[in-house]
Image (cartoon, rainbow, N blue to C red):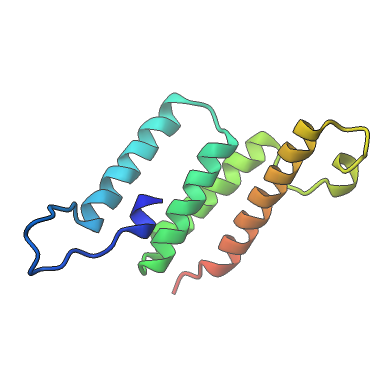
Length: 122
């Protein structure tokens, strides 16, 4: 989130030292790779990958965005989020916690779909 909301540094303002967006992006990608290597796939990790994908696409890095969205899709597949199960999970007897999780999974699924269709490799 910091990377997406980071204001560019004013070249005339030397009072606030700020990390350059390119440096922050590289640090973020390395940190993400370390976390991915140490932990199993999770919805939070997929969401982080989707944010990275959106940033890469917005910054004109379609190849990196394509790889990141593919990674998100593979992790979602491992967790079983690769298809929406709206009818199966919307029963009124299902607890609130399970319904919230199902809603989160649906949002992740559609986030992946939208980014996959947006990322076009020239």
